[in-house]
Image (cartoon, rainbow, N blue to C red; front, side, top):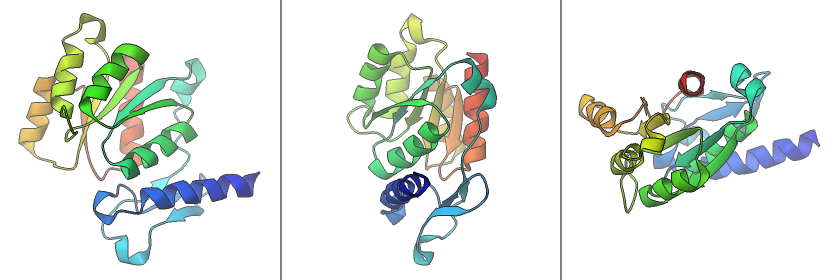
Length: 185
């Protein structure tokens, strides 16, 4: 069983590492620090390592939280989904802003991870649409962007983002933001 799980993890992470320009992580290790998925040396550049599993103790004891991932690149969605599912969350995936707004209305997630640059409706406009509904005024929305600038951060805050995280990011940062957002909500 452990070998099957490791093989599946390596397969999924190899898909996540396939596109060098869209990468989030350099390699993934299990809780003992053993590498279970690795990028080829030519693609490693300055991408951070990921340590798994990330333990979201307080959250997992109360209930299984549902997180919506709005990300247009399949590799990034796959990596985030793998990490969040491994941590015990239910994950809903969408690939554009319009689907994100519809999924929030339909599924009512506990938290949203929203990329800024999405097709059809961008992440900031989708966040504004979600925030315009009274029911979702307090829904935690973490804005993700590969463009880390003060202007993007300001726009994310104005759109109604609860937090901002620039890619590539450290999973410990993501854990801290998710833990904080779900504790407050």
